[in-house]
Amino acid sequence: MKEVDNLESIKEEWVCETGSDNQPLGEDRQRNCEYFVDSLFEEAEKVGAKCMSPTEQKKQVDVSIKLWKNGFTVNDDFRSYSDGASQQFLNSIKKGATPKIVSKAKSIEVENKNNLSVVQLNNLEPITNVQIWLANGKRIVQKFNISHRISHIKDFIEKYQGSQRSPPFSLATALPFLKLLDETLTLEEADLQNAVIIQRLQKTAEPFRELS
Image 1 (tube, rainbow, N blue to C red):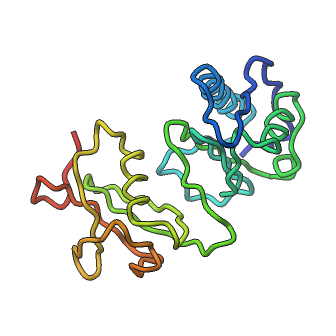
Image 2: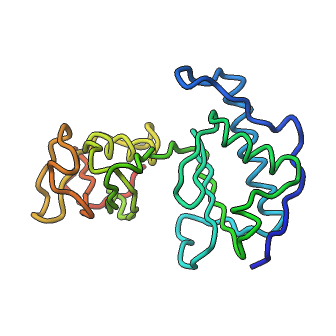
């Protein structure tokens, strides 16, 4: 792994403009953000940061940066593109400077999830890992607050798979086997801390079928 001392300067036009907290970014500004994320991802590759595929998460690293559609995370700490502090972080990279958390790292991994929206967590509330078994056999682990509802997990799965690829489905527990879940319940109410949840397609009897 190459040690990252600094990053190449990022062009001025790559800057992602901010929007107000109550207003979504306009189409042009959202496009600028997406372009900025793609460009930042490319720059990270150039200077030696390892870009992970979803299956490459075995090696422990000092700093893990994930670029999402609605923000980015640094070691699971979510930062919105519209937040002022996040802009300072990104602008320092743009100017060729290296933020402290990056400059002290011996190794960095960057994962591009620009087509997905991150699940925003409240660090003041308990957080739990939920293992999700998708209908195609793939398994993913996602963090949620215990105050999140099961409907939030379903929404995450739909965004993960893409609306056009996701047929109607329900969610069930692994233990007791295939107990259907009430989507209005919170994870705490359904006792789903560190649980395994299974995606069941509604129009097939096969538990694991490749999505077309």
